[in-house]
Image 1 (cartoon, rainbow, N blue to C red):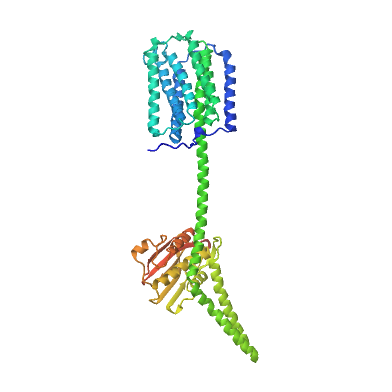
Image 2 (cartoon, rainbow, N blue to C red; image 1 turned 180 degrees about the vertical axis):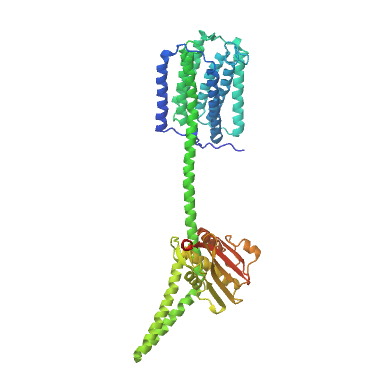
Length: 540
């Protein structure tokens, strides 16, 4: 398996810090310093011993650090940053050693603590804990740049390996602080600190200061860098209050320092959670905008396809339409020539009759052109209540323009309670045109064609429109796929006509289907909304 490429992957933890993040992190650090300064004079103030404070405080820390480690491991699995892997391991290390520290604490779970702890075990575990995490922060900073920036092995094995190393380090340090306690210098005398404590805690405090300095040194800053700086500042206050400036366990500095530590441990977790929420919000907005844009493009494409289908239908009728229009034009020419001769001989009565006939033929030609222009015109869908009788008649006239009508019998039957529908006239005429022409093409001129266009009331405030023929009918296998795109029985057909018919009818809130005609042939039925349903219900 190939490892990840060296191109940078921008995950939450590596996003460059902007002015807003800098101001927020700076405000948190300033507030932390102000609170620390106000707390210092009271650090040695003796307070009541609250034994339950330790397990409560450290349980919160463990949960916080485990969640932070899990989030950082997740970030690592995306970007494969070795620096993130080290930092995530550092948070896992602190969570595990906090468990050992709480279990070994004297007077919490037993008088001397669990895990075979001695009088110095808990204090040394605290030092290992507060010295180990700054080392992982330093490692995080130093490993941010190539060539050590990217882990090329599988993410799962890298995470398991790092987690195992963190666990082994905690086990080794816990054994050293408990079974190997005698090899370590004593830093506690009862609940008070020994002289050796100054050197030990000074070293631990110095590691936190070094981690902060390294973070400040390595630019440019990521958002995670800023919050790690805030963590290390609070960490310095924690160590100073609870192990340097105070006098013993359970004094004011002891409690205040640990609360500092809890707050500090939360900084990175809160940052990761807020940034995750922000990212999901941006993704949700982007997804919604993309979905709306996609729907708009689909609607535009559908409208364009409907228009192209009308153009295609018209293209198939060009020669027939030319013949249809040519008939009244020829008649007009003949009447005008006859009128000229009649004008020469002064036969006014016959001249006027010829002119009237020429005008009638011109009106007929104009009607044909108007029908074609309305049908081919590209316009927005507009639905209004339309009378079905004239609409069906006009659709028949368009579909059979130029055809030999002597072999085609057409009957239009409009039901008395199904005479008006709420439709886009042009689109529904397109459906009718397609169905009528399909019926004509299906006969192939071999039989006498009988077409019946009818309307009838349907349930749900709908009207059913049907186009029945006495043609050869449809094969059952063809009928199953009839309305699928690019399915056709015509040698030169594209197979999109019935698919577009279905989309038009469904956009009108209806449905379309085909079935056998009892008298032979096929009947196509579709439903549209009754344009007078409300008025009829009111009348009843």
